Amino acid sequence: MAEYVEKPRWMTEPSLQDIPQEKLDFLQKMVFESRELSQKELLPFLMALAQRSRSSNITFSTEEMNTIIEAIRKYSTPEELLKMNQIMRLMQRGR
Image 1 (cartoon, rainbow, N blue to C red):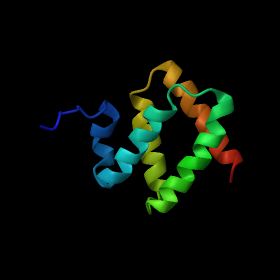
Image 2: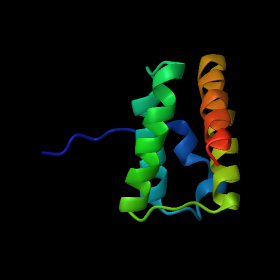
Image 3: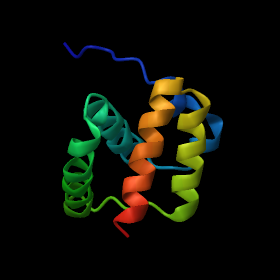
């Protein structure tokens, strides 16, 4: 029997209703997996994640990313916001 797992609050944000569920699930997995990583471990993790998203054919438009980021920030703790800002800086540096 499958176990019911409650969606994180950010995933129930009304502004996300037009974004496919598989994209939101992918991001939730990223958030969960990166939670305990150090700054040094984040860049290799993000590079592997980018490869995984390409192989899974998951891409995000700028509008989708902005909407998702705002929804996540709305429900984040100060520690989670710090980690998110680190990830965002690393992603921008990698462009």
